[in-house]
Image (cartoon, rainbow, N blue to C red; front, side, top):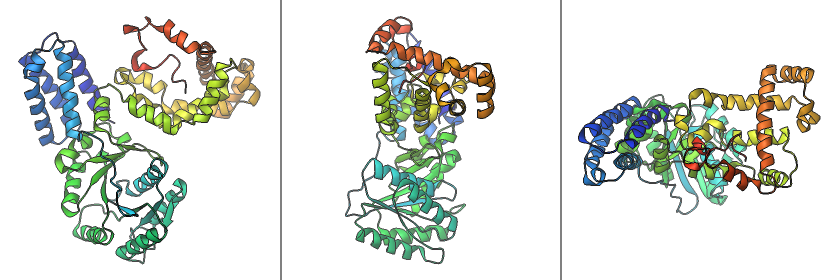
Length: 463
């Protein structure tokens, strides 16, 4: 998400940082670039105008003109304004209510509403330790009821059954009663979507709102609809007392205009981002972290949170202990690391959160892409246990057999073995606390005496 906007603003930021002093002329030039970047990202025109005007007023102030590093001062203004447009801080769910706290999900058909119900149920169960029940009132699409039942089973929450012949309000009343009797903390209600906003749809969801009196009414909207997402959210807000927005399919939206428009146009906070198809691909929306990502400064806080939540800590500790004792790093360990990366949303998700990654060429990113990771896992899966333990025995005929078994080429097998050897060398240096020594030895090799661009050690992330 935000690739186009990040590229454009990234170039602006680089130019600004190099400025010895700021003048009205170069502010005008900079703001023209910022304006074009926002319009190309499909940000709503009123939001663009207000954003550019705010930055201009602050940029022409004494604070920037008299700063020792005016370029950086101006970058900070752009960063702060992005945060302000998107809503200052993360606004979580307010579940302080007599249990069960009811969450009503609204939105158009195809926006990812049912999937978001499953993701939210999993997030509340795993992170908030809530006892969750889900129910579908979409009596027009039997597949929606079946889909929610499947998702509930997958994420391990209670599913309240409903049938196409029932009335939505009746389903809602029965589900609420069952949630009370079962002492559930949260009841999430999926509603019917339509292909467009109509009176019948609005009347039905208003009736459900009266029956349930939810503590949260979330509007689910597809990020790829750009400016339309903000306009649809406004139409729903006029019919329902919305408390927030769930922006879905942001992994497929390279522009990001919806995220920058919704708060300004509706006054409602974005509470969550749907960042993939898996049931754990739902992130709380943090405007400050997103602004940092847009300007190419990464989002290390979210990355650390993700590692904490999704990496198998036991496996990581076992590998660390093994390396510390000087035991060999095998292809099985290498495969385990790649599987951990896939769990965290894949390499693309990690790269998105690392500082400076917007300056890495696309060809380099593609080499470390999720497709490559899946290919490497397939290659290792085609090896015998002996080959994984002793890769030096993998010669000509074995390479051909492994390539055939994994549906790849011999050169792919060679490339994997080369990358593994580099990783193995790095792991050897970590033996007996050698990591600190290795980091000291690396100092001076990179500008500023720190880590390489993007903050990654050679060979990747040693989880």
